[in-house]
Amino acid sequence: MKKHAKGFLLSCLCFLMFSALAACGVTHEYKKPDVAFLPTYRGALPAESAALQDTVMAELPYRSFFTDITLRTLVDSAVTNNIDLQVGLKNIDIARQTLNAARLGNLPALTIGAQTTRTNPSDNGVQTTPQDYVASASASWEADIWGKIRSRKKSALAAYLKTQAAARAVQTRLVADVASGYYNLLMLDEQLDISRKNLALADTTLKMIGFQYTAGQVTSLAVQQQQASRQSIALSIPVIEQKIAVQENALSTLCGRMPGTIQRDRTLFTLKVKDDLPSGIPSLLLQNRPDVRAAEMAVRAAHADMGEAKANLYPSFTVTATGGFDALKSSNWFNAPGSLFTFFQAGVVQPVFQRGQLLAKYKQSKTKREQSELEFKQSVLKAVEEVSNALVQLDKVKSQEVIAEERVTTLKKAVANAGMLFQSGMATYLEVIVTETSALQAELNLADIRRQHLAVMSELYRSLGGGWR
Image 1 (cartoon, rainbow, N blue to C red):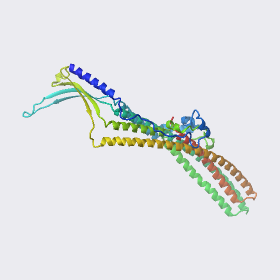
Image 2: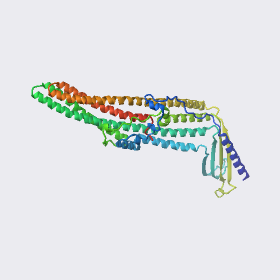
Image 3: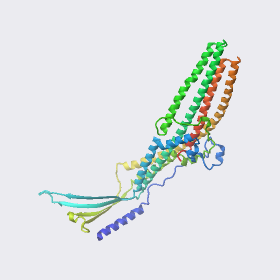
Image 4: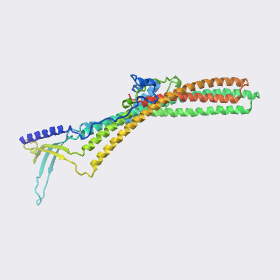
């Protein structure tokens, strides 16, 4: 028993000694890569550069940013049922299991077992014990002196956080795609309504020209040209209807359901555009943009992997302890202390020559760390570019919409005047056709510009990192 006690005390002393040495490390602590941010985005409002308001656009939940109930319902459905997003969430579960396993890295590995053996030696061979009964437990522990296990934990944690950020990035893109698809659907509804109204106007004009043809005031060419103009408008209607069905199917797929009709009770021009919210400053992208966050987590993981690879170049200290019962007869198997045995071993292993593999892996991990840092900086540049582009587009599309509205108003008056002048013989039928065609195209363009206005706001919201909260 005294031998067993001495062995146990020796094991405890080795464990404490190695635990004290485990505070050592072979790599420096992780430091976030430096990025030189501009004070404001290109295209940002001057007021934003003076002082940042309390709540920037990216910090608004999507249910607060989007005011249309139908759109919010579609986004809710997409966030719950979208297949791509569900795959991203499964990746989080996988990374979580890896992290849970890595957190147990400092604990010893423990195995238990029992076995019995029986040998029938030959009469002319070596005589051995005919039977043996063994029940034992074995524990093996490696001292984390050079931070190898700690680096493995940090890598697993960074990988877990990266999958979380990646899933959030999928969600922000999903929210923007649903909003863009919904706005496109409302634009197509508006264009279909405009085309049908203009088709009715073309029918009226055709009857008017027909009366004048009967009266001998115009030739058959006038009738034929108006018929061609009417047919052009009629031809666009099934095309728009087809686009509506395709867009509804695309939105249904984003929402994780079979293709079908999308119910909507709002029109394009009844939606209020939120284009006066503060965009914040570029440095906020580090906390608001999930893809930028994921890129930073990739740098953290690569840094930890480099630490583990470097620690593999240094000696490893392991302690192994085995104890149990061993007897030649089954009746004495668990008799104590007569059948009790213990085994203790502490060892140091220093890699000397591994055909250059360990050094090559360390150099590769160092290069991958540098590569991930470059990718992080590239993601930041890309994010700032996307926000700046969206701000410029927003400013310009607002100017376009004002001009387009004025043009539609002007051409509507021109259509009414052309009709009255034609009836009084002061305008030709060609002038009527050209005016009506221009008015139709202007209305269609206005609907598209309003759609762009709404879509660029959702894109700005996404590019700032909004939509995952």
